[in-house]
Image (tube, rainbow, N blue to C red; front, top):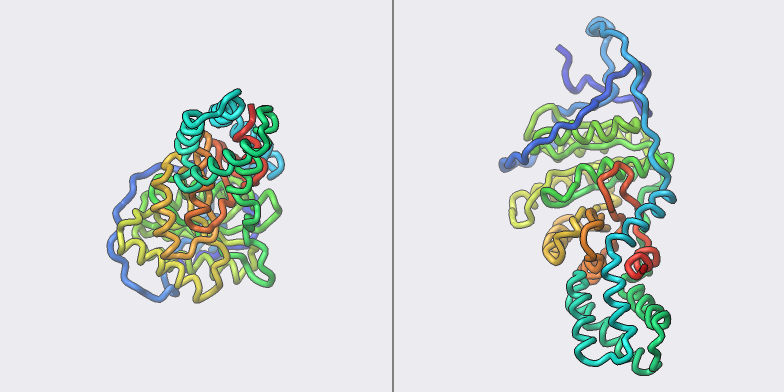
Length: 379
């Protein structure tokens, strides 16, 4: 019988005739046991998509048609489409503020309504009070009631709050070795899906990508990730044993990326509740084991925009464990709660680097400050 470790991967897109996963069955979270520290080397991992076997062990398979690979949407097209969606989903946010600020008389009651609108948008108390105080002073000094001028003042102050000085570029261009991206987050935020969508972004930018399915505790997580990758010719390394050591799988993925000179390796991790100390310790272990082979260049924390201020608590704990370098904000197409972008960045000093505004495979794009603010204030 073939050893699992006898399965190796050939860099690139799948060869003609190779079968690829076509479905991503869903599964419930399986509570992980306490994982013991072990050496990363020697774990049983499965390298999905390009197994090679010795001639004497090969089993004749009927010829099948080569699956047609999908072509991911270019980043520029994504940005235009996502902005249009953001305009639609946040229209009330912009209209409410502009209507209040363009009244003939802006008294204390009006300013109270403005504060309430901003707080409802999850801007956060500190940022809300700072923005309102600044606007009150500027409107008073200029004495302008012109709606367009008031809108311009609001736009300027919002851009300052969102902070365009952050470096929002993904660090995926490290010379001489693959860039290593670790993706973390709690259960239910769409983390595995985000890894799959981000792989499509990388492919659209002509990068050779390999995925590591280190979420070994959720049934079908590896299959789901493998399916995402196979659609665009991106291979996945996973374990065939549910509940296997996640750190070992992560190490094998990075090791393979280095060996075959991939541009980027992205490691998906198990969704874990931030108040479970043993699970957070295990996440820290995954990062330490990866660093035996290579530096981790990006730690992306996936947050659900609809969780509002609760997302801040998640972000703080993860940041303490794995030094988060960027935020991926999903489900921003719900209510007008775009202020969570400001709240997260102000609390952590970490930029939002990517946003998701839909369920489609290409509904993920880089975050751009001015486009985001303009969409918030679009009428």
